[in-house]
Amino acid sequence: MTQAAVPAAVSAPGAVPAPIPLREIAPWALLAGVVALVLLYLVGFDQGVTTLVPGEAIHEFVHDGRHLLGFPCH
Image (cartoon, rainbow, N blue to C red):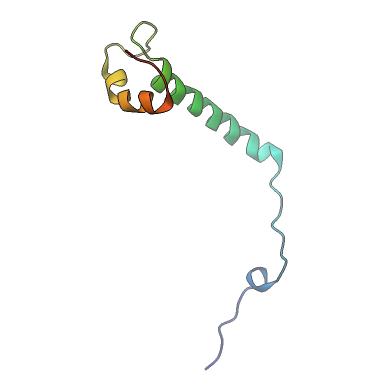
């Protein structure tokens, strides 16, 4: 039996991956930050008075998560 050829990048011991430039990471980090802030608002601060979505739908949907994260809601 012959052994299958393994690419040099996989078989080279001590191979170091190429660094990713900050210019390529920054837009994704900004997007992740905005998404995290929106989720924090929806879970933690959507009480109905300052809500962006009318009604109690979001509050009731994330009710148990609010208690788990320590946000008061009663």
